[in-house]
Image (cartoon, rainbow, N blue to C red; front, side, top):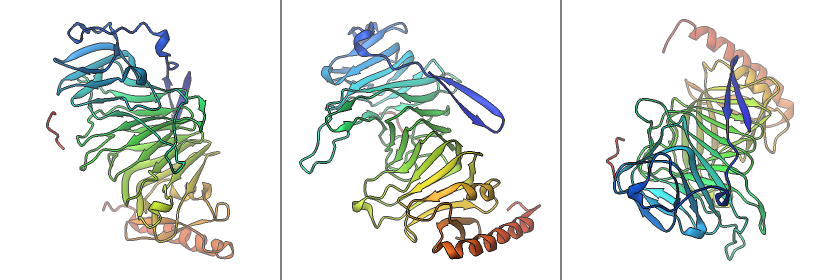
Length: 371
């Protein structure tokens, strides 16, 4: 499968191999001390590293109760990637560092379609958990790619969920790519740790969900295409996230404040240096409420004026959004209180934006111990 991301006038092509089926791979259970860079390792039960190891690929399956504890050591994964299949049991990799001798660690996330419900009738969504620290490899950047295909089960369409967990910051600086329908990346780093330091590309109906504040580096950009979703988690709690730029590259991009009944009063804020929506693309904002939720963009944003023509907020008239003065540095993107007043508000604020820019012209205003 090939897909591309276009930014400015440069096209970057990413080649994602189809997710392998565990039964079709020549993966073997082999003594950990004999793992080599050419070995496809099947994890059965709980495996523990006793030394830094290098393998071609890792295969984990809920039927094997797969758990991999790195024990403070470093695991280097090659072109075989990390391959997991689950629904009812949560496989995980923890306690150490993980990297790749390739350009990215590729996680092929597969589900069985056997997901269950709680007693209240809510789906039980288990994730493959990666709490080991993801890091670059010997001087070259390493990225992270999430891909996979998922069947329809008894509770409907299953989702392949990968979670970046733990309380130690990931240090890898390559791109994070989440691709394909029903693939979801959870950002669940705790204690102020950073989940992602580089740029994020979310494509083809996949999603990235932030469970806590400050999961992404302030210097990162997030690129959406083809009904991809960038969102705050639906779990309760106030959240704030700051990134350099949000880009909608193609089709509809979705940003959701993630509110459900249990988080109905929780303030949530996304802060951007710039908002860029390509021609022919649009941004849909979901679960926004005035006074509770804030999408803030710097007043010297290069692309904001054009982006305003391509934004909708659920529950309000199409494209009727305006800029509200938040403070000396930021605009807040809000829904128009009434369609009749929208034109006057946008006209006045548009003039104000132009005047502000003219005045501004020429002015410039964890480390984590190895576990």
